Amino acid sequence: MRRSLPLAFLLLLLLSAAAASAQSLEPGPASAPETSVLRQAYWDSFFNAPRAAALAKKPFAVRTENGDFRFSSSREGSYFYLYLSAAASEAAKRSSAGQKRPAPATQQEADAANYPPWTQGSWIVKRSLANGAFIQAKVFLRSDPGLFIRLYPDGDRSRMDVLVYGGVLNERVAIPLPFERLLRSSLADIVNWTKDAVDWSCFEPHPELSALSSSLADRIRSGLPALRYADDGGLDAQGRPVFIANLAPQGTKPGLNCSGFAEWVADGIYHPLTGLWLDPAKLKERRMELRRESFDETAEKKYDPYFGLDWTRNIAKALADAGMPTRTHSYTESDMASPPFALYEPQNQGKTPSALPRYISYPAYDSSSGYSIQGLKALLYIAAIREPGSFYFASLNKVDSTKLRRHYHVAVLIPFFDASGAFHAAVFESCRETDIDSFMKRDPLNFIHLEKVKVERDFEAPVF
Image (cartoon, rainbow, N blue to C red; front, side, top):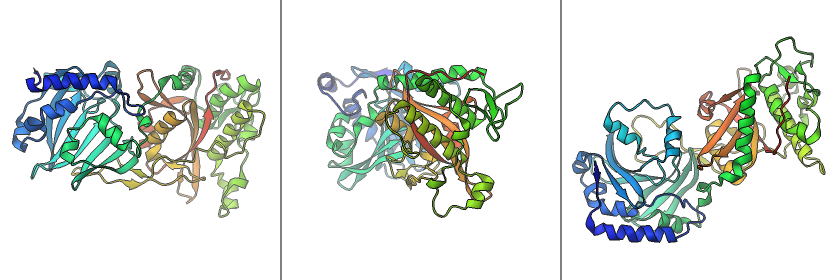
């Protein structure tokens, strides 16, 4: 059912809405609907109510000048949760539809589906089931379950963590306010109090800067039906299908493996710039000068464990030279080597999570292996914010049964924001498109080395 606000708060709501429209939150999550008036209006009857009263209250919706919102609660383990959820936009509903949730079985489930707990501007307040104490609050800055801030008490003041797909961009940012007062504060005030410590522009994407990246993903996607997978398949310097190992011509059913497919994508950029196709003989050249002093030359010759790393670095250098021919680029110049976070929140923390989540150290960049794949989505999101118009040739690697770190697989990653501001990370590998979350979960022991390449306006992949 839908309720009206208490009369005492109607005037306050109108004044707040007018003030919000006059303010500018640049940089910051400017488009998030403001809910401070609602949290104040329902403080005693919902957010700060005794446990039994809060859990007994049936879900209800409220319509305000800032949009429609739903109040609900749930109990899990030693805690109970209070939800203030903004109504999902059509774009958020489309995003939710892609997350493979079961169809609603009841009207209550259908109502809840219209108010996902992670819509932009939504709050989730966590309290102790034993004594009702406030534990934390999550505030979602975009309509995405992976983009939020976490607020929690710290004595007579409060702290805040900022998370992007598990990557902890900021931890324990001090807010000089008691937690119960913070729970009734506006998001605008939270942004203002922490603007010197937090880069709030990370939550204000500019989709127009991603237009070429989105277009590149579409053009690669449109070319996939004409391709097929073939072991060791690549293209020679005339765009003809060959076997990468010996450069011998393929047979009547040519195809591409993961490395050959990455070359096919690279050729689509390289050919419009130069009129030539990439030469696989040069792409598979070993960069022995970049190995660490401790590498085993015998194992290198026998197993070629750095093939994927050399292949992607050689591609990136060739494209950099073609795009800016006035100077020569180094083989490591395109390495993505600056992680924006040092802590990470694991997805699975057990069935009975602690009061606050446990963060783990995120490994620093390593020139031979890159990054732990756990943080890939967070890395790509930050890259799309800070370096729009770039995409990445990736080399997956791990220590295998030979006790060597082997770069065994190559992929193409294209992060971008769509017109609604929703984040996407297109993953292309071995002549097919893969979901980013499945790609990351395939093997949690994987590391991934990334080569950054500029997206060009023209794309002309070879036809064979």
